[in-house]
Length: 379
Ligand SMILES: [Zn+2]
Image (cartoon, rainbow, N blue to C red):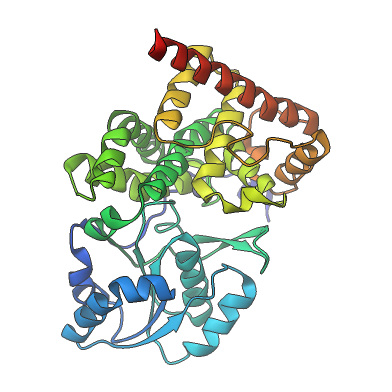
């Protein structure tokens, strides 16, 4: 790299080619996928395929798209991607249909095959759909690395009617993942670090992160209640968009910091915590970053209030870590501080002990907040 190149500081914003959202949108999947290729490899798990495969298949047939169904094995690992690549050599487009790990796997398969990629999420539980990266795990489910691609998915198609049928816990998890977006992006903007696209955040990247958080504070709980009733409302549409599009663009072109690094640290533990969703672990990571960021009490409790209302885990006990030792928390901290982790995007440096203290402090703050809430309710 020449001296001139190394001093250039670019602002970079990236996004998928097309984003489509609406109730029953899956019925139009063929119309949108036909622009990408007439022969598709569909990656989905059995549950998703039995629930909605028929509707997708009809839509593809209606647009004269040949397709093959490849069953997703359950983990977004390097092995799983290679297994599916071998099945998709004839495909002109790879379609990921399902939850975050299915979608991350489909992106990896499309990248290896050099084909366009269509992403059809069946939950709004993570911001994985829109980004040009996958989170890769070992076959045992431990965080391994981020895999970056040359391009974002060509199509992201979100059927809100399908998502309203998914358990509300998934929407709450997506809200938690999306609540991390602005907390992390503003830390990146403050420190002058790079976003996930390797540049400085643009004003658009910043604006999307701010809007994402605003929508979730205003409509997050309403959307979760609509989900409990299994219905699509304007608040539900807004929150699905915040969880998927705003959070996806916001984290990728804004940047990650401590919340996701601490999530990755939690994956190094054994036991009950593996039963939690990505967003549930991110929720605790976000609160931990807020503590490290010296967030004032009233502001911290604004986040706690929303998380508690949504049933998200805000105590160590709720994480399945009631008896966690300091040495286990140190393992979380050391994993979060690994070289290349997004925690190094913070404007300040941390030791493992700083993180262990913040992890314990979140638990103390949350328990005090919940106790005060229940006293007020009883009064
Ligand atoms: Zn996330």
